Image (cartoon, rainbow, N blue to C red; front, top):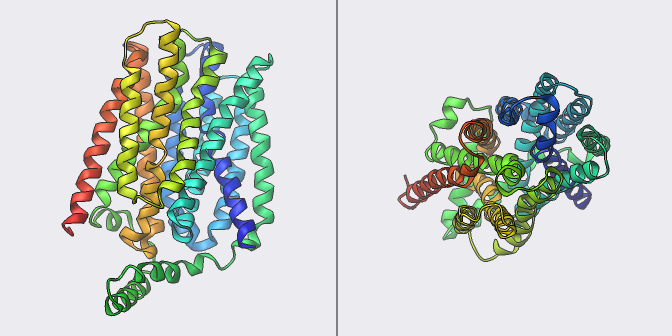
Length: 419
């Protein structure tokens, strides 16, 4: 039964990724049809992110009341309905309308599943499960590209993906009995993990008692103010915001960048843009093995180096030549590979840093912080692309990366000095 539940969680992570990259892949086809500026993709993205922020902040309460399984099933059902709405939209305002339920569903399932995996599985499993998200995120643009090249409209692409989500929704509701009781095992499992890290038997025993005592005294829903006042939380929130801002901006604008700056047609750009997510997927598959040797902080630094290298390649001025197109391809893949270890490493370390009894609340706020970045930065770059040049994408990414590195190093110094 345990392995069956793990397989369902894998499917859920694929489901999370499927629609995430489709808007960016389809947008070069959508915005001329609706007669709106290219920057309007940022408006749809912002509405989705506002919904995810709200639902992420409510995830702690919902999981506490009904459990991870039901939260996941109902959230995926909501996203499936929203994607059906996308598929029947024939005006821009309708996309905006259906973006609301999509965001509400995506945020809650993301926070609930990430916390569940962080508590119940080792770091390598977190990487491999997020690799499954990458499978979904890379598959979505390929589906859209396949549909467009077959002479169909982008609406058909969304319809195909919505049907896949509906099938997963049915599987999740059937699997609800598998989740029963596992949320209640959280504290004892985390306590055992922390106890084994003690340097002596006496310290281990004391650590275990402290965690259990703290869990009993804090078996309640934390407020946002209480969470933010915890030492190190502000730094990790800003770091997570920067990471997701970088990932979402790249995912949304990569295809448009390839069309506007590298001269590719919309269909080819949709396919090539997905290679950013292929880089994330392959990187997370490899990262699962790297966790056996390196810790979370080391893997985050490694990922930041990969992102830096990829953006520097995108900055090389090569014009509209075939060499420029190939360089852009390599650059986006490297940015994706660099992104691979950062998200799972941040999430997996949260229960160890802040305690299992507080991890759902903190991860929920982390998700909200991440979606603030996803909400604000893609539209901001859309304005830059619309009024200045889409060629500034790598510069924009470098600025975000610099702030993320700064926050990570500050957090590491705080932990080193026990602040």
